Amino acid sequence: MLEHKLGVIGGSGLYDLEGLADRQTHRLHTPFGEPSGEYLSGSLNGQPLVFLARHGAGHRLLPSEINYRANIHGFRQLGVRYLLSVSAVGSLRQDIHPGDIVLPDQFIDRTRGRPASFFGEGAVAHVQFGDPVCPNMLELLDRVLNELGVSHHRGGTYVAMEGPAFSTRAESELYRSWGADVIGMTSIPEAKLAREAEICYVTMALCTDYDCWHEEEEEVSVEAVLKVIKTNIITAKRVIAALTGQFPPRGSCHCQRALENTLLTSPESIPEQTRERLQLLIGRFLDGERRGG
Image 1 (cartoon, rainbow, N blue to C red):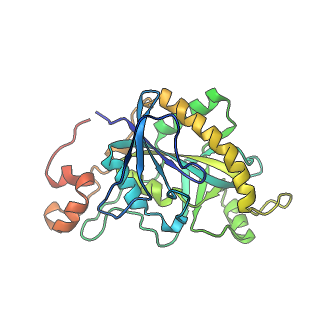
Image 2 (image 1 turned 60 degrees about the vertical axis):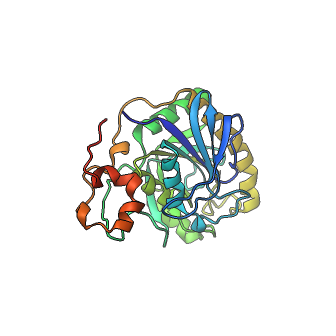
Image 3 (image 1 turned 90 degrees about the horizontal axis):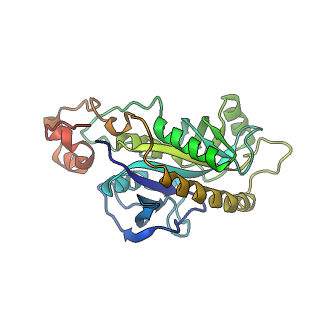
């Protein structure tokens, strides 16, 4: 059977979730280092939920400084198998306005030097990533937004840039020429790692600005972004509360079985230290166990 615990990873402006019953905090250690901070667990509308602020308490981590592997592994340690990522983005399209929500279903990776896999050091696996978000999570989130009457766009391409500086005009126009819809700094490698961790993943991208391509709008600034973020976060919290009331999503997907038949390295060839580090993710293969469901 598929597991149904929901995780939420909060981006800029979303550092806590009010209204959780039975709140507990968890300071975890992972085989990949320390997560961004303490995880918060509880229940919302009777749905078990785990929350983590991506940038840490007080927003102290640059996008490049976030330990994405530790964050995603920590969610798995706490039993999360569905993950909603909340992320601030800039719009690359005239019809995506500041304050809108976008549910991207594709990503372009323009990051540099971020560890994007749990594998390596003697263990090789290649997961499918052609469809990088969970279709059932996308369907559920779209339905909830429609029911709430929230202006949003289903589908689209998210350019993940390194940051922390915003784009040059040339870069912004380049991404527009590629047909990209929004630009942000955090959903990659997050989405890749969630797939390797067999977690159903979806991004709720909160549009704050027009990047720097729009000639009739002011160039993006932190001050302008923060003004829109306050409104966006209020909306995001409404969406999360409504989402828990309709959880879990309908249908079946391959996300929670994404590692099946992907390990190229024979189990006996994997170094013991690497086996221990990957035990949570591929222990059932290393131990010769078959997984049902």
